[in-house]
Image (cartoon, rainbow, N blue to C red; front, side, top):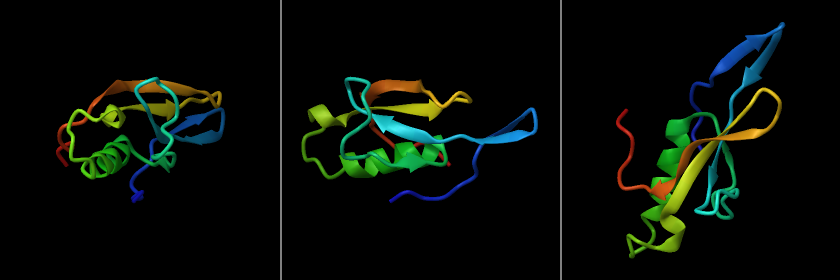
Length: 91
C-alpha cells in the first residue's frame, strides 16, 4: 500500500537527507499494523485512512493514528499527534 512519491531532501555539508515518515498509535509508539516507512506525509495518511476503513466502528481504538518524520540525527519527531482520521488529504 505504500506509494512512492516525491521525497523531501535537504543538503547538509554535502550530504543529502531523505525524509521518511512512519505512523504511530494512540500511545505515540510505532504503529504495530502500519509499520512501514513512507516517502511523504500524504502517503502515510492515505495508507492509514485506507486501513481504518476496514473497521466498521469509527471510534475503534486503533483509529487514533499520528505521524513521525525522520530527523537529520536519525531520531523520529512527531509531526502529527495521534487523533482520528476522518478523510483523506486533498491532492
